[in-house]
Length: 230
Image 1: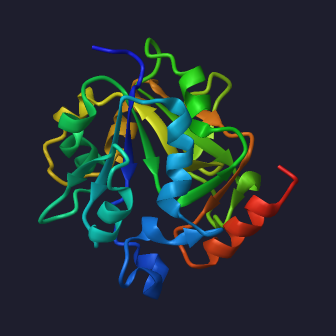
Image 2 (image 1 turned 90 degrees about the horizontal axis):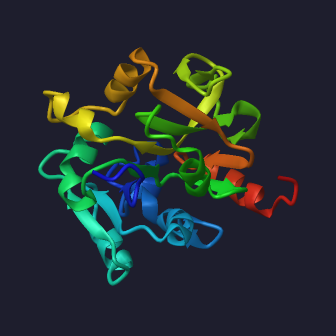
């Protein structure tokens, strides 16, 4: 089994409920920021990694995404009749992703700064880590009103608590997915198990990140992309 990721799962199946009318006729990854769909912002980070497999999961209004991504070498993991959440969705896509650790990426955020996928690849240590998450300092997390998700210690190990915001990008080993009996479940279940064995790590992001999970995030992301002060 390979130790380093050569595949990525793009989470693109969600309902985009917080977007209101903007997702009435299209999936959230097709919402435009600075003239480009969110899915294209994500793929611009994926392309330089030269990964062997790129997979997107689909559920809500998949047709616009299928049409937009046609011919771009992306495999689709269809979740029907029910959406499977992040953990169930990742496990469902494993036949397309292959064995070993994989990248996963949410498609409702925009980045300004170093490629988070490249940063993760450079810091990944499979001997110590079961997952490595990009964690954004709250001051660099644009459009995020919460107190954060994780605390990082001096070794990079993370625990639940206010501090850094999970940026929606990680490297994760997938073997533990098969230990979850539920069909629909969140990756939070795996993270908690990994944290319990001191194998859950975080990597601080040095650039800026904007949550585009709500309508106000579109303008915030566009201003962030125009801002020369990173």
